[in-house]
Picture 1: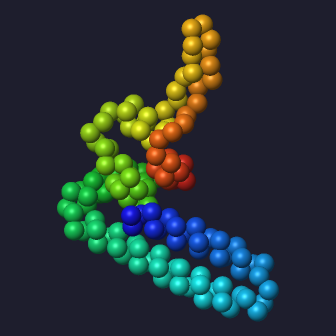
Picture 2: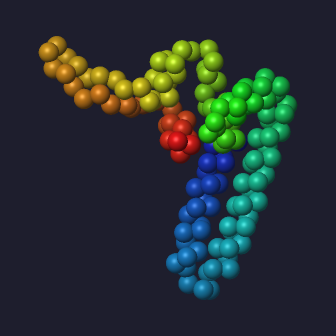
Picture 3: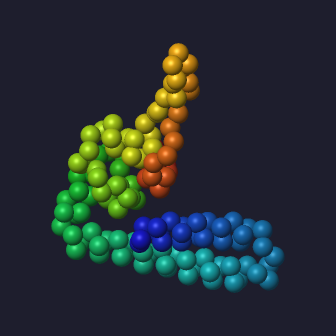
Length: 132
């Protein structure tokens, strides 16, 4: 839930920053106030996530393990912890299918279809894409 709220606040922050550039001068101060509030809210969410990880030693161990991989930062590791609790219990093919990055075929009889990825957990897939 905290991670979902973080994503929502980030979306609102991006929208407000985009509006700031095109808004008439009379609205810019109010938009800037909202940007400041959203930034503070984002920091509060980060603190909440830190506290949740500190309260659960197992999550801390898993986060340390994930962060030891080059390229895995705090956002990706926390997304994997929160949105993919099956990580570590399933094999790589099962995890890839669960996330929605495994290509599935669409073959019927002698017809060989296009292989594509679909389904899965969009939040995890998006975060993996952005981390890449």
